[in-house]
Amino acid sequence: MMIDRRTFGLGLALGLIPAEAARVLAADNHAGAGHGGTRGAHDMGMVPPEWKGDEQIVFLGYDGMTALDLIGPQYMLANLWGATVKIVAKTREPLRTDTGVMIVPDQVFAEVPADLDVICVPGSVSGALQAMESEETLSFLADRGSRARYVTSVCTGTLLLGQAGLVDGYRVTSHWLMRDLMTEFGAIPVDERVVRDRNRITGGGVTAGIDFGLAMLAEMREPAYAQAVQLLAEYAPAPPFNAGTPATAPAEATEMMTAMFAGFPDRVRAMAAKRIR
Image 1 (cartoon, rainbow, N blue to C red):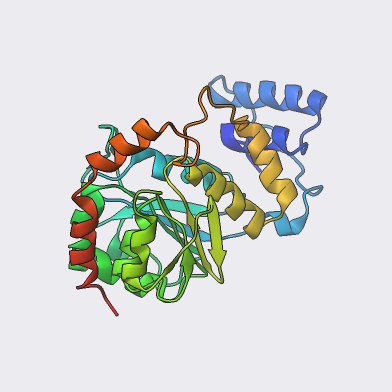
Image 2 (cartoon, helix red, strand yellow):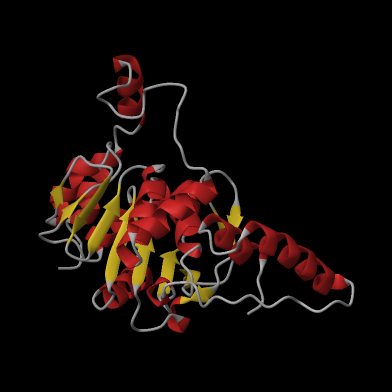
């Protein structure tokens, strides 16, 4: 097989490519890339067969979504050997995220396979509310979510799952500001970084999407695989402040953030009253 940069990096991380072979393979691939050489072949027979799959994974894209909600878990799942990972939306028009980063969808809803292995919904604030008002988006989520092997979300993406009628009776997590609102959708809010209830797997606010992504790798392959990708990503959190949850943040920071989104809960409750049941 031909080795691209990501496969090469993952192979190194997983210990699939011995150091000397990696040096030769890298040189051979470089020669084949643009200097008339022959690309190197790599024997992947040493890889456990269960480490390669053919999963169909989609991330829902919409204007205003939180960029890191998408990119964190997308990075992890893009390293799922053999899987096809797509970003899907109503149209192929570029989507502006909360930070201004533009993302171009791979597929429109009609092109998405009927039966998915994973459907994942990133969160947002105003963007999520707008998406919750889109009948086309909700119909897509309800349809694909009704058959998907795993129905998942990060941060306030759970609000969209709730609006599509996909979390009734399920334990879920979400961003701490909105987590308790999940009762409006018939769900059971849980104060944890990643929560699994049957085939519903949800991540907490923003950065929890990285933990969620690793949990999905372990779920769909095995812990050793997830640990290797974590090493590849050098994911070893050591934040300069211990203010990532209301339990550890200074009271004034929590009060400021809560006040900033004071009107949001009422808007969510109004939307929940119209949810798919």
